[in-house]
Image (cartoon, rainbow, N blue to C red; front, side, top):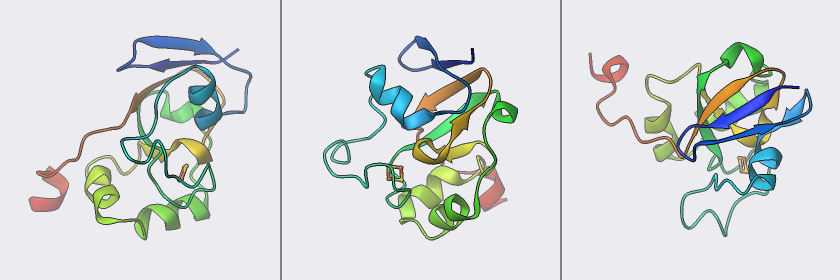
Length: 120
Ligand code: FES
């Protein structure tokens, strides 16, 4: 069975193959959302982009980004734009991601205000 390691929380959980990352994080008591989105979010519909996570290891074990997720990321609020800089391949929406193998995940990734891909 695949494992998800939440790096900041130092927590590892075993999940069935194809498990949804958002659901497994909530089940494990891992807070995905920054305040105030822990109270106000789209409940996993892929619309608010506040459940974004950075895949530190095992990006090849994640489902591929669907068109809906890509469009959500591109048309998302400005904060997601900055969070995505330099992490275009690894920044994902937890609610849209299925885990097929071992992954290491950073929740609530910081903004990349000085992203080398953007300013250079
Ligand atoms: S919960 Fe809103 S985009 Fe994932």
